[in-house]
Length: 86
Image (cartoon, rainbow, N blue to C red):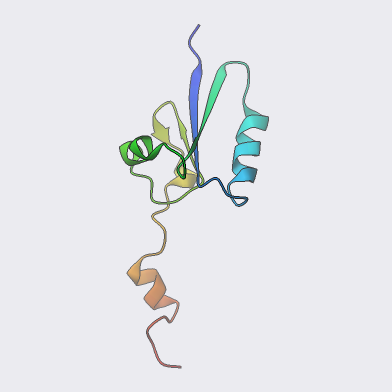
């Protein structure tokens, strides 16, 4: 039987724990959940998906849209006032 492949990428920190718990809570018997702690291993898989931030979830080889955040950008930081005098 084919199972839905779910990968959760974390930094092994308390900030990522709720995402892991949520995925495990929502997973059904047809789901196979793998957690990659990037502090220990998993960087090859993270690079494969182009992850820029954690936690991140990949389902059947596709990064979930809510996890497709690149992190801070120069433009967003400038818009927030960084680098500008008060």
